[in-house]
Length: 201
Image 1: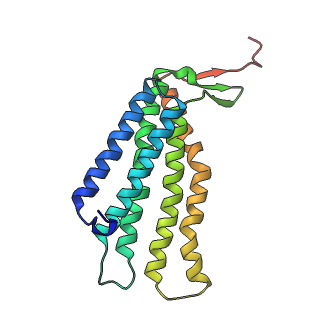
Image 2 (image 1 turned 90 degrees about the vertical axis):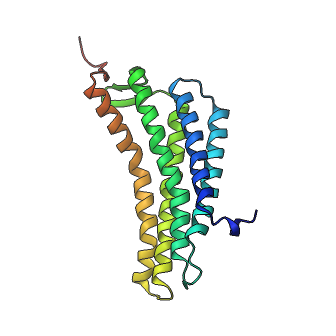
């Protein structure tokens, strides 16, 4: 079936369900500590592949053949691809949150610094969120490009590049915000382990 014929919402629904099923499988295995590097890579490729197909299918479904610039189609591409990855990343973050609550020793504040145990679930969700953010920035820039049409100028070019710049900034911050949230959860539950080796006691 050619990708141009993927204009049925049912295809989008099935692809979304496929992404969700894969993410839940990855999250459950990560929560139980049964993940290995090969599995994370496999699930990541499956999620990424389904997200790409979802972006193509949703973009084709929303495509407006009468419009000069395919803004709706690009919006569908962005929502289907970047949206799938971002939602997947946040779902995995929930699993990681419960994983850390179950094993609070995986995150320790030692001498004021955060020490994080190696976790394949964490690496998987970080990669998926990273891709979702950067692809979202590119997609929004492409949407703005379609909206401005043939207009040129420095101001127009800056508006097209702005979403990508914001995405790059978010990429540098989201990890910090994520761990602030995890530490807040552990502290609220009284599970945060703080070690001060300089304490004479």
